[in-house]
Image (cartoon, one colour):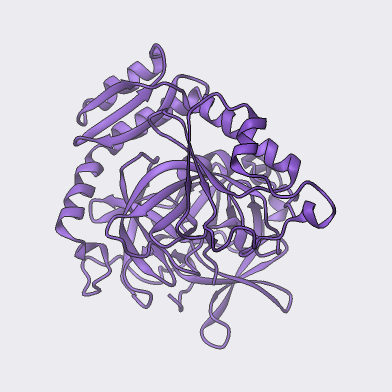
Length: 433
């Protein structure tokens, strides 16, 4: 079944219909203060020295990355293909002649470190148009063995991942059950879509799962804590709180869209233990896998094991770049670092792991595919919605929200889409609006 409910998901709605927004708007005392140090081995102070050194080098180039992405956001149909951390600097991949706006952004970025431009065979817009044609063919026929479509940040083409053999063929095929054509092969889909860009096809080694499966917080809510969605007496899903954000003069808690749908309510903790009502789910946007809980979010996130009380202050936010190292803080996994960003990816939600409404076989667009570099598990069930971040001095820089993953692979929604969908920015001080 394909999700069809369209969320409010526009900043104008947040501004013009305040009657829909209930709950506190003024933050009380912080539930915990940011920790200057921690004995928790999973806290970011205790990172492997080589990974920490690389993250600190990348941290210095964040203003350059922001300038580049701001120029791209102003002109999404330009020759921009992607941006990557390479050779201790930033590389912008671009097709054709640079625009005046991007040239100015590059000049501004070079004040912070090495920034170079390399030619790209295809722009980001061209690759996404090709991906859109593939999605259209899949939707027309009702199924395929495609798990995800990734867009190479250097503009070389698409990377299609088929579901692993263990799950292929086990996913319900709605059209086949009703006498339709059934699930199509990648080869047939590419032939019908008439894709003109290079395509690489591989088989996934792990199925993609929505990761739904820090327990005693209090308002205003920290990121990285456990929350449950309920509709009346019906338990829907267990997930992780993301960043406290502000939009339209109000404070919210950001999390993953597949965890709940209005009119669900959010509760912090675990039924049978510490369990407090946070507030109603205000809106979810299933295409980007984002939602807002109408509750005051704080400017801290948990950093450490699944039972830690250590927190870090959120100092800012940033865009994604290939090869950049990030961490995620989930209520099941705790903090996991050494996760390297690879590419922007669209994935189809498997009916083996549907969302909170039982919906599946729909597309979540534009998440960032990333891999844990040491071969460790990147995220586990229950981590969905949790903060994805880099380092910013003694605090952290918000990068996005966990969507799902499998094995060493993590998928998260990046901050450019959070701005596009909700016009929301992370709370970075004791003021939550």
